[in-house]
Length: 215
Image (cartoon, rainbow, N blue to C red; front, side, top):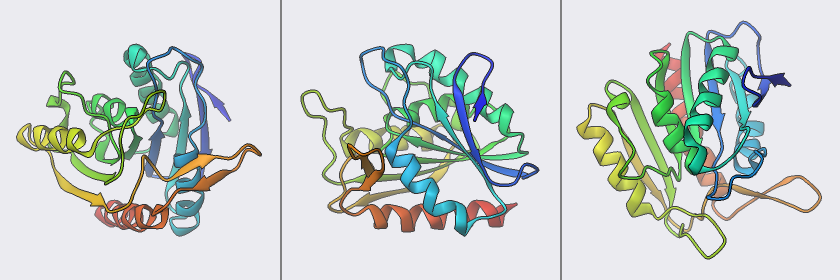
């Protein structure tokens, strides 16, 4: 475990001298609560690491996981990029992590963002996306419910199109039957996959293959 300068935490897996790194950032909520590890990201990373032994993976635990503290979450992501030390970076942004990743893409090391049900609100500037690849995966059944954060696919699609107009490249895939993300944390602590999780995994693996091959 790595304590980042401002107080967030980074869980690193993979070679210490990796030239290419994958930095994963979590979702959030309105309430300003202490950061947690993401079940979606944890489940995904556990399956990607054996497939990509040359890549280093980093999972970020924000200080505060709230979109009302977005600047601080972006700072946590930027500090994680620095701590990972890679020359090439792919950001994985789940839910609110999509907005965090787009802001963090101002770092010239960021080549690709893999958005998992990404939150890309209209107020979010996308000028950082010029020359960056944006690969969006979104569950067709994703919806915000009372007390349960979610992101409607129409929102991420609109944000994706704004990013393209700003100079990004990329692809958008709607996963039929998919919900908000890949996994939930069971009461015993382990991530449990949601329906269609392996469809998300297959597409995420293809994007990792593309990123690795580009180096």
